[in-house]
Image (cartoon, rainbow, N blue to C red; front, side, top):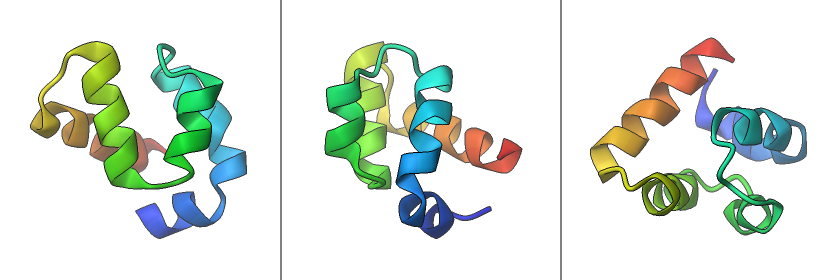
Length: 65
């Protein structure tokens, strides 16, 4: 799967994203609105991760969905 599919079907993926990154709030998910950079930034902030770690987690998550 690629990110364009996630972005195009964001409403369907919100629950899966929140299952993976439970610290993200519904407000975070609304702001992210399918934007990968925004998701990475919110993961960095919520979990204290580096940008590289957040991007790696997103890539790993994408390969599983």
